[in-house]
Structures are given as C-alpha cells and as structure tokens.
Image 1 (cartoon, one colour):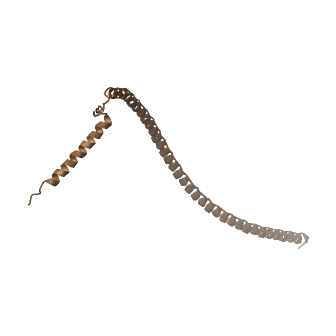
Image 2: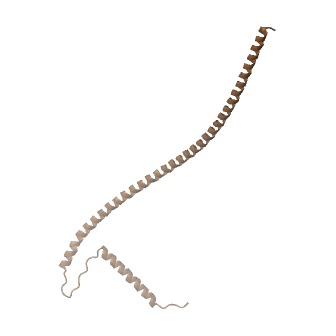
Image 3: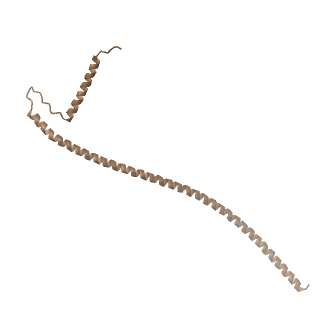
Length: 170
C-alpha cells in the first residue's frame, strides 16, 4: 500500500467523519425544528381557543346590541305614540277652550239682553207699601231651584203619608 492508498483512506475517513458530523448536525436541527413546530402548534391551539372565546363574546355583544336596538326602537315608537296622544290632547284642550269661549259669549249675550229687560220690568212695577213684589220670570237657575224644592217637598209629603198610614197585619 502506497502513499496513494493511505491518502485515499485518509480522505475517505475524513469524508465519513464530515458526513457523520453533518448527519448529527442535521439530526439536531431536525429535533430543534420538531420542538419549534410543536411549540408553534401549541401556540396555534392557544390562538384558536382565544379566537373562539373572542368569537363567543362578540356574538353575545352582537345579540345584546340587537336586543338594545329593538328595545330602543320600541321605546321610540312608544315615544311617538305619546307625542301623538299629547298632540291630540292639546288640540282637544284648545278646541274645548274655544267652545267654552263661544258658550261664554253666548251666555253673556243672552244675559245681556234679558237682564236689562228684567230690570226695567222690575222698575216699572215697583211695589208700594203693603204690596208684594212681583215674581220675576223664571230663569234657568230659578227653574232648577223650583224643580229641586218641588221634588224635595213631594218626597217629604210622600214620606209623611207613609208614616200616617196604619200597617196591615199579615
């Protein structure tokens, strides 16, 4: 074996050693890559879990928002109904005031025409000593008063008649 065989063997062993070192380095890198992949997978699972929790919270918030929006729309509709009701009430109050003014003017006009006539009639027929005062024509208040006093006297008379009648024995 000559020099060339020793050189060949030496080169061969160097290449084998280099290949073994390279294989060990590749195995270490593979192990590190697997560890990094496992860590990334774990981180990815945590991110998915966090994303799922966020999605649930977002859906709950969306449902709450929808319910709030519906409640707000309902409240707005009730507010509109209240406003319409208050507007109708205001119109009716104004109308009622106008009717009251019209009726008051009619009453003032009617009293203004009949009151001076009644006063002049009373002045013309002024009683002398010993005469009774003539009764004025019955107005709405006098008629009502007479009606009430008549009703009261009638009911009083009926009550006294019932007391006076003897009871029949049964």
